[in-house]
Image 1 (cartoon, rainbow, N blue to C red):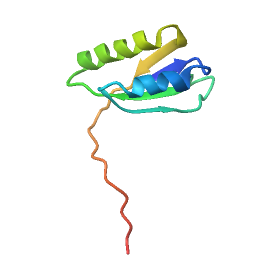
Image 2: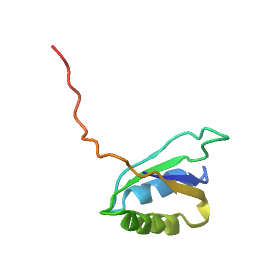
Image 3: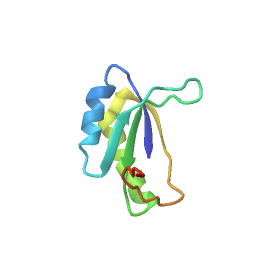
Amino acid sequence: MSVWDVDDARVDDLGVQVGALEFVTHCYRRPRRLPDWPYNLFAMVHGRNREEVAARVAEIEALLDDACRSHDILYSTAILKKTGLRIAG
């Protein structure tokens, strides 16, 4: 997961552009939790290794340009399989 501190006036438009990238599967806006968490844009980036992910994050950083104040990458420590909603009956 990549997390971004993006100018609030531009986050919606830029989020659409980030979400359209072929290597981004999820992209969404979330509220900041200041002072500890300044990030308001989240983008799930996929790659075969950390180097590939870092290169893709660099592409996002270039796209965001001066609207981005900071960012970070949160690497997964385990692969989790998502399951759909299950209703017990």
